[in-house]
Image (tube, rainbow, N blue to C red; front, side, top):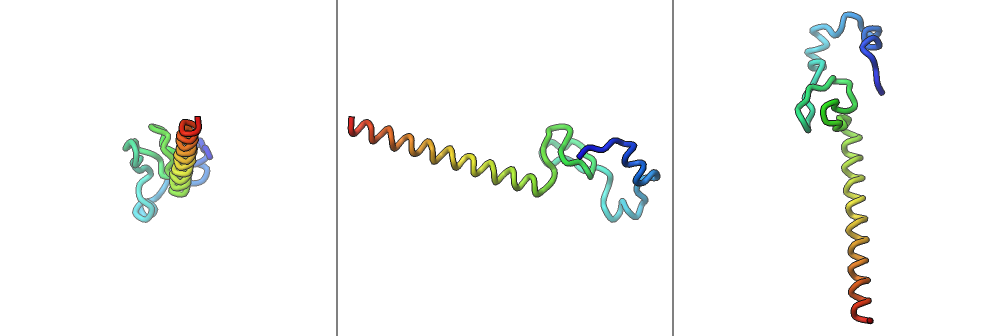
Amino acid sequence: MSHSDDDWEELDPEGPDAEDLARFGGETRPCPRCGHEVHDLADACPGCGHWLDDATSVAGTAAGWRSGLVWIVILGLAGVGWVVLRLVG
């Protein structure tokens, strides 16, 4: 979800106070992939596009492993089929 600077000013025109910053940290944090400073509420890093939401990152990683496993199974079956055709033919 994208927000403009005006949207945030409407929520809290004065910005976070010292108590909020101490409790929730700064307004930015470094991207774990590229180190670019990213706003705390950002979904993705504007520098490299890495998703910052932990649930999305885990889901993306799991989907990547499943996709890789499917390709390994397909290539394995193709290899077995090739061997069988060579033996029969």
